Length: 382
Image (spheres, rainbow, N blue to C red):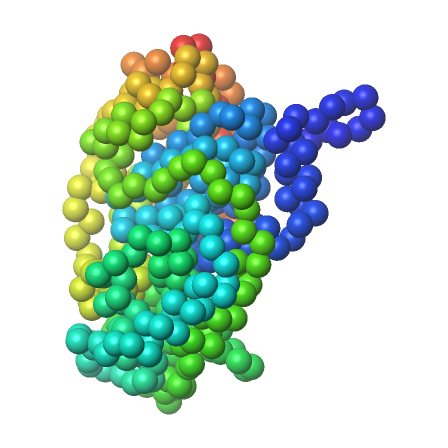
């Protein structure tokens, strides 16, 4: 970004400079750590060339990083994702509330209801202190009944973000026994780990944990923008229902073979209404199938979003490949764009997955060499 004398930055570039000077402003983006996220700097850099009134769509929005970047820049933004876990996270990126209101809601829920369904078994007794688990279940059952207000949406995402993670030496940040924070360990391996080390869950004050987290992530909430996050399948979703046309499509679709989103987030899936166990069936998820089926499915999405985009709109796709399924990312995206109104203008290297929490990261003790990711820039109508 050039801001030397004689070069006038765009309004969005000036906004980005302001964002960098206000370190608390991007904190809401960290409300719930999620291993497939691309860094906030990616959509911010892309949208620095946009006009503030341009509308932004992400048809594979995940945890809503593109949507949050658009919000930081004051741009209307919409996202679609097939995962209820991702949608719950991303919705929180667009709400406007304050720490006090969220903390008061949490206190009210914890003091006014008792849980009906508390899961049992080795995993649950070793993962959570009994009192902590009951309080988690109080919150879960409340959100299954209602989660519409900004405070409800924000609180749900905050609890999802602290549902599991490492044990700290000081005041606990997470509610669980020792566990990764970006994905949930599978029950059998988690139980073996805890038992082999004699680890039992400590009692965690849920309200205190929520309070500290709310005061952090909601310290400097950006101004509200027009937008929404919708649960839907990008392959069949009627984008016309969003009620506007778009100038920017900024997204990162699932990589070929990447079908473990829900199993790897199974505890958060339980919290938003899923079963208290791992579900391995990926269903009709995009990452399944052959290369031909995969590119055809992507082509369908590109055609569908083109129908709600202005002539000259920009499509920017970050894409890569899993080490376990090595393919040529640029060739796959090029093939998926054949037969669509989108014309590729540029392909740029985007670095390796080891530079950030990207889709290509695998949870295994010995990792294969990562495959460099790319950013593809295309324009509607050439």
